[in-house]
Length: 414
Image (cartoon, rainbow, N blue to C red; front, side, top):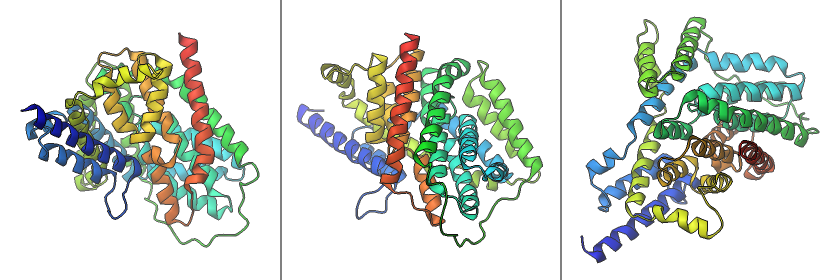
């Protein structure tokens, strides 16, 4: 390839990456009905069509162990969802509505705990409608509780390798030990969760009640099936035990998912119908787009450029700040895909910082996390509006508090 043609391909690649990143960050562009997945997929197609890479190169760019792990955990979550476990858990929590501050604490603790062992997006998707209706019927303001739900799922998911997609990617890429990850990331996650609850309780201390009784219809809730829920919880327990071994996580997870498919009552189509194919497609598209950017050689120059401007990503506090900023510029998943390539062979502590910082950063603004968007969209369908500004009033301070915890944790361990 001649020098002039090479420069043209590099320029086109950068344009494709920039447009894809913009689309993924914003979620939409004026005049187009594309969502984040659509932008990522179009970006991947454009990388191949523009000659940045061949089709075999694009397929090779996919990180199959991470995709298999994510897919398998979605099957486990689908089992619990179809068994009515999530809806039942939300209904049990709703019994404590008489004491709003305590209910907020229980809701955040439960959603954070479940997010640590299951995909955080599913917790938001299933908890939001049930909790919102219960709050409105109790004449309580749903906003602080829904913000707490979204923020807690983000913070709680930071504690484990399987809590969210970016952690899975980090854990699989760096082959991190499940137990060591948990021991390092759990303490700052717990403290950040406590501070988030305290701040929300203080911020909305005079606004927990509603003055107007809402008019609500019936909402569909999946009937609780004790047998199917127990089967799903057994699958989770088996995974948790085996994840502490040296067996490949993706192999363990897909094997357990295969066992769940062997059911006399739960049709395969029901389980697979709840797989988040959009998220899997988003991952595939981003793997290809990030690989295309990597081929330009420009990402390799980024650490030196950042160091020249006072941000050394090889210094853990600097890495935390860069990760937080980049996660809000292009979203946390593509940010982690890029940063893990810039830090090959990094220490486990470096990867722990990547996981915590990218996940904590999701609470800053509405667009920082898919979990935020799920909660806001589900609430909107029930007549509850959470504006960008309303989210930021809580999200910005909570994120700053979370990063303060992370930086203090780094200082203590240095």
